[in-house]
Amino acid sequence: MVAEEKINSTALMHYRLGTVLIWLGVLTWLPFIVLRIAGERPSLLWYLPFHLFGSLYDKLSIQCSCLST
Image 1 (tube, helix red, strand yellow):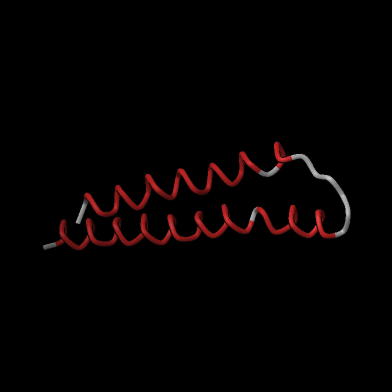
Image 2 (cartoon, one colour):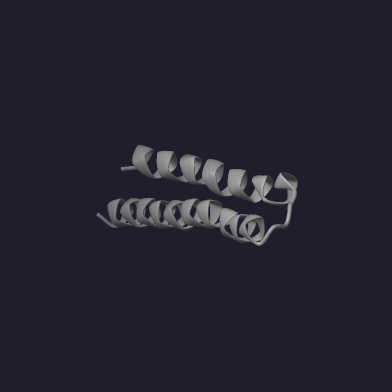
């Protein structure tokens, strides 16, 4: 019983972490878009790694939480 609660708690933690990371990955582009609207030409290399980290880690985190339930 205790082990099952721990597994569910871990799965929920992974799911929440994944949700936060996907939003951070998406919101990474907000400063890029604002700078583009302002007429600047920011490099994609400053934004893409953070976006990919958030998106890919989220995908792994959600898959782990689904496997443990």
